Amino acid sequence: MNMYLLLFGILFFVFCIGTIFGSFLNVVILRAFSGESIVLPPSKCPKCSNRLKWWHNIPIISYILLRGKCYFCHEPISIQYPIIEFITGCLFVAVFMVYGLSIDTIFALIIMCLLVVISVTDIKERVVFDAHTYSLIAIGLFYNFYLTIVQILVKVNTIVGFVPTTEWCLTNPMTVSLLGLILGAVIMEIAARIGYLIAGERAFGEGDTYIAAGLGAVFGWKNIIWIVILSIAIQIIFTLPLFIKKLAANKDWKTIISLILFFIYAAGMFVVQHKTTLLNNSLYLILATAGMVVLGIWACLEVIKGLKNKNTLTYLPFGPALAIAGLLLLIVNF
Image (cartoon, rainbow, N blue to C red; front, side, top):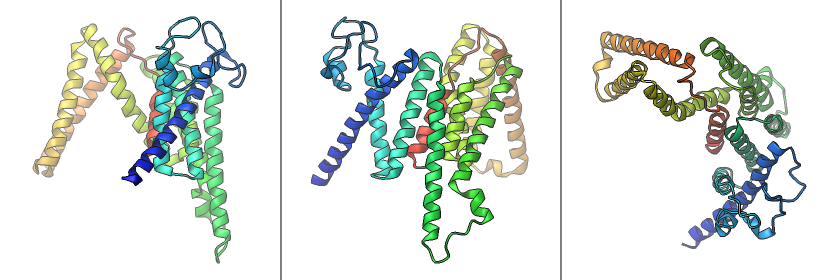
C-alpha cells in the first residue's frame, strides 16, 4: 500500500509540474500570435492588459477560483487555458511512465511541448509558426546526433573499437533522422500537390510539410511513414462525420450510400476472414476482393466529385493529426 501511495505521489507531482509547463505553453501560444516575447512583459490579461497576480497563475485552480473570468475586467477567460494545462499534465505523466528519469525524458518532453503548441495554433487560427516547426526539426536532429555520439563512444570502449562500416553509416540515428526529415517533407509536398488535381488547391498547408519534416527528424524515415498513415486515419475519424453531414445537407445521397456500402462490405469481409474459412477458397477470395475494389473505386469517385463541390468541401487542419500521431508514437516509446 505504501508503495502505491508513493507512486501516486510521484505521478501527482509530475502532473503538477506538467500543468505549470502547460501554463507556460499557453503563454507561448498566445504570444506567437501577438508577436510579444515569451519572457517579457509578465503575464497579463489579454483583454484589459492588467498584470496578473501570482495567485491568478495557478494552473487549473486559478481558473476555478476566478470562475472563468478576469479578476480585473471580469471578461471571460478562454477555456483553452485549463484544458491545455490539464492535457500537458497528463502527457507529462505518460512520458514519465514510459521513459522514467533519463536524458530521453528531457528530449521527449521538449518534443511533446512543441507538438502541443503546434496543434493549438493550427486549430485556433490554422497557422503553423516557423519558429515552432524549426525548433522541432532542430531538437530531432540534435537528439539523434546525441544518440549517434553515444553509439560511437560505446563502440570505442569495446575491444573491437569503433569501425565506421557502410551498414553503420546508413543505419546510425543521425542518418536515419536526416532521411526521415527529407522523406517527411517529400511525402507531404506530394500529397499537398495532389490537391491541385482534386480540388484545384493544395490539400495541406506548407506548415504541415515542416511538421512532417520535424517528425521525420525526430522519429526517423521508417517511423515517419507510419506517422503519416496514422495521421490520415486520425484525420478521417474527425473529418468524415462532418463531410457526411454536409453531404446530407446537400442531399448527396449517392455519395453517402457509396461510403456506407464500402464500409459495410469491408467490415463484412473482415468478419468472414476471421470467423470462417470461406475466403480460403481462391475463387471466393478473388470475387470478394474484386467486389471490394469496385465499391472502393465507386466511393472514391463520388468523394472526389464531392471535394470538387465547394458546398461539400470540409477542411480541418492536418497539423493536429500529425502531432497526435507523433505523440502516440512518442508515448509508446519509439
